[in-house]
Image 1 (cartoon, rainbow, N blue to C red):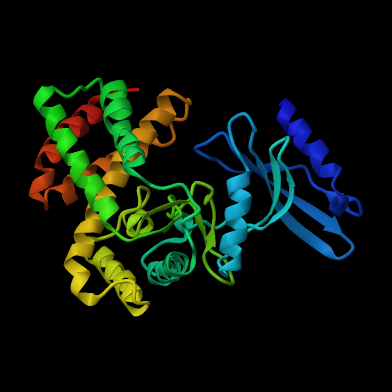
Image 2: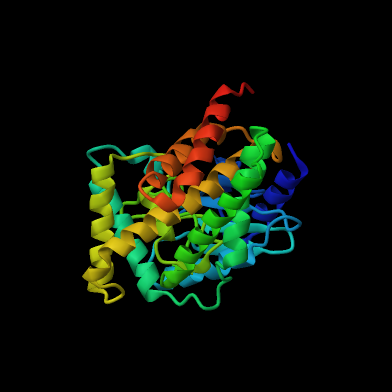
Length: 337
């Protein structure tokens, strides 16, 4: 038993809400790509039984304050998020309401997808059209560029030992500029940043439950939608994805945030936003392995590369990126861990 777990237990047992009843031993609730850990515990008392989530966020590595603030903002919009019931910022512990154990990823199939995605799109449109984002960090040129550099630095050079030559580097710089310009030219809204099937929970009421929102920024309109519909962890047929894109687009038109004449430009913006996001994701997956010793995300890299290749082929501006990504994908498939 590690020291932080002992501290977490001591903190829980010191809370007044758990004095009159029986508190179970916390058990791991989910894995995370950060330093945060999550545990679930049950509290049995005279009125029944209640399930709770405990976030363990070491203060040296994680700041709980954005999570607390954003949870309150999203809840005020009527979105279904974990409510912070208790907090200890000094130790880095939060007690949260429990949204259950069924992720979208585990529940999605051909019979459930339409209902689940419709709920997720409606919740996203509510976030984007009702929330104020001007107090959030700005998803600016520097951040977009740093994220894309993860692709070449961690997946290309570190994992695949594949560096760009001078002409490839020049072409890569042009592609980055194109993608950044596209992202910054979009309406800037409240961006969750990880709005996908592992962070959405299936709930009986007010579906979906929304997790992992603490890194929210003021950024491009299509970012969260492409995270959802071009998920790194689940792939759908192209015609089905286009239908969900149309559904999302028409909802935005109904709210007055877009007009129907913007459809073709919207599609390109979303496609290019997806390329930027998958460049970032593939680099992060490699970094999690090499820096943090987490190999569970390596199997998700081929899907991210395939997206960059397949979507990039539709745009002549992405030709050089597609060529280098194809070379990288071949090298990746040859590597034995």
